[in-house]
Amino acid sequence: MIHLNIGSNLDSEHGSRFDNINLSLDLLVGSKIMIEKISNFYETPSYPNQNFPKFLNVGLIVSYKSNYFDLFKKIKLIEKKLGRIKAKKNDPRIIDIDIIDFKNEIKNTKDLILPHPKCHLRNFVLFPILQIDPNWIHPVLKKNTQYLIDNLSHKSRIEITRLKKNVKIQI
Image (tube, rainbow, N blue to C red; front, side):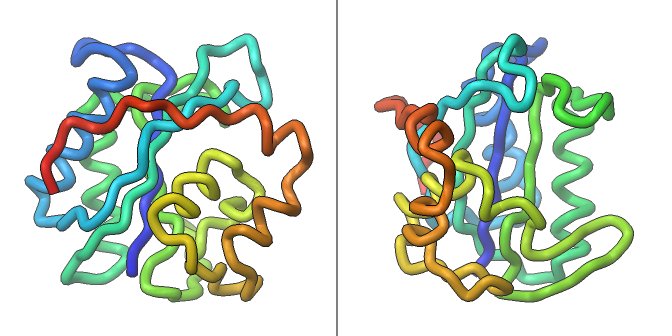
């Protein structure tokens, strides 16, 4: 199983944060990445600078026939196509697509660390996973999603909102 997380906290020439995420999903499908499950949209304050616009995120379970590095390259091309510009860490961005877990593989390369090195600390990753794959186990920590959520700070557990709005894609 492959888990991705997509986030946006800036409008773009393509439209709103919602539009950026929806377009990224269309581009993933066009890149032969099969979407199996998608969470609702979740909204969180921008971290660490809460003066930046709020983030929208969705979690995905996808299938992909090739390896993690090919998937990583496709994701970077999609981000570039949507207008992502590499800026300072944690700055606002049009789109951010992260590989959270690639078939439970554990990798540490100069370009990519699997599973995502901070996924267990991020509410906007864990809550969508809990929604779409409640039995997921972190490949390194060997802990389930609910355990990881329970170990987030109280603030982190309450500053996330699950929106009723869903993505505009048929899976």
